Image 1 (cartoon, rainbow, N blue to C red):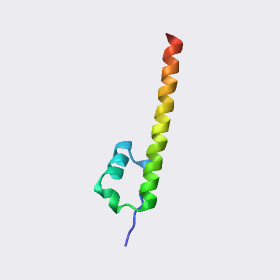
Image 2 (cartoon, one colour):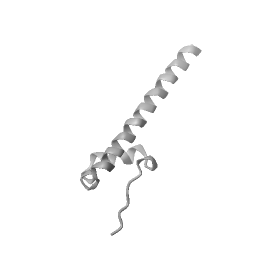
Image 3 (cartoon, rainbow, N blue to C red):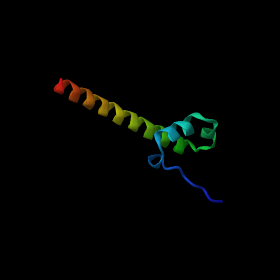
Image 4 (spheres, one colour):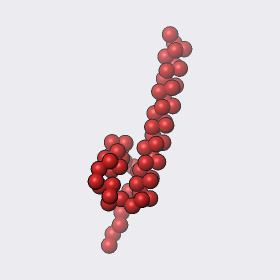
Length: 62
């Protein structure tokens, strides 16, 4: 039997959300689901940091 593990870093955020929110999550191992959630958390953190930098840049040019 071939078992393919999901690499969350290779998937889009949209696909990760789909995997985490749909009944397909029942077919994921607990480790895979944890990795997906951790990757989404990291991407949200990066997005928040980028938004903060953007706001600082906008204020310094105003």
